[in-house]
Image 1: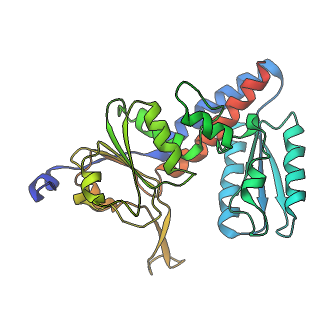
Image 2: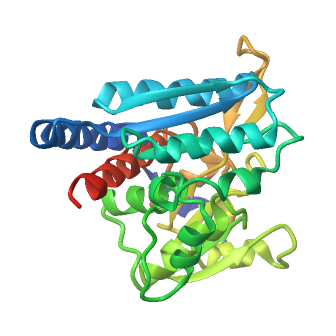
Image 3: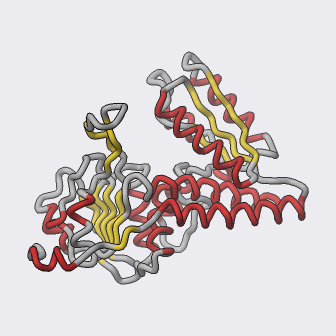
Amino acid sequence: MAPSSEEQQEKKACIIDGKAIAQTIRSEISTEVKLLSEKYGKVPGLAVVLVGSREDSQSYVNLKRKACVEVGIKSFNVDIPEQVSEAELIAKVHELNANPDVHGILVQLPLPSHIGEENVMNEISIEKDVDGLHPMNIGKLAMKGRDPLFQPCGPKACLELLSRSGISVKGKKAVVVGRSNIVGLPVSLLLLKADATVTIAHSHTPGLESIIREADIVIAATGNAHMIKGDWVKLSAAVIDVGTNAVADPSHRTGYRPAGDVDFDQVCKVAGWVTPVPGGVGPMTIAMLLKNTLDGAKRKMEQ
């Protein structure tokens, strides 16, 4: 049953400030990086590989490289022309695998159409797979009693936002809307490991609205702007919006503005907690990339 208008007017969701939480985590990472430097004379290193000159990819890569510098992680900037062959790109990955100063490797996706993404990603050493997307890491994530070396950054960010906002996952009903390899599937596995009861929904799920209304926790990762409406959400639910969409807005200089998968203004009147777009999952995903790089470095240095 949808909440009444009176109930909606009485409520105002707690906005989960992903930017502020991410800044706290970056400060924690910076402190640990300094300790590693003092103890071992080395700092963590992250190689971010950019193929081609896509404007959106360049923007994401610049954010990641800047974040490394801010916390004291050494950034290895690998910029490769779009015409590179798959074999040449794989050879570069092997070179980074062998570099002891590199503790994490991130190949920015998407890659040009003539390169097989799976072929390249499979060549990243599992010990440097800070994106957490190597089949062995995902496989261990899917198995009870096993732990991957790294968890995927976006899904890890979702769980960290819940945890740092004091939202318990154990025993809760969670609905994940979306089933991508990057977010939907791995975040479902992380929720299961945290003892939630998980439903995975998608574009072919019948009765989607009624399924979402049963959820204590909603993870929206569909790639459809404002798909999830206020009357789809249970009173006091926690809603994590992973969506990154562009919607037309003539008032912006670009003619577009960022928007999530959730109708934020509506959901705020119903949910207990909700993440904004931008300023929610996005900054946290980069923070989790830094954390994974730090953890990879600690694992190697402390052997």
